[in-house]
Length: 91
Image 1: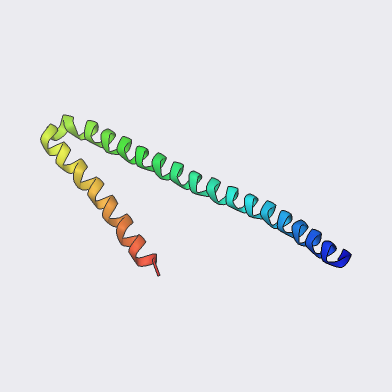
Image 2: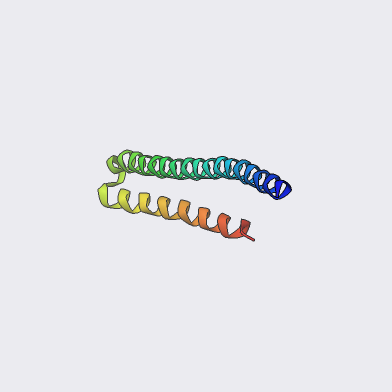
């Protein structure tokens, strides 16, 4: 009976250590995903700022309608390059 109790306590000790390691790995994974999401959001905001800056710069030269079309084409081209690169690199 003492040997069974020792095995059981040993099992509980191993489970406690494994759950601690699991919690640490899950928290690192969640932190990584949050950082990736934040980075994607900031990159998106930066691209929108770049598009607005291009629109503002070109608006004085060719008018607001053509500047809007040129900026939209710039955004679509950037998105197409991102999609193409992502598809090319996916397994």
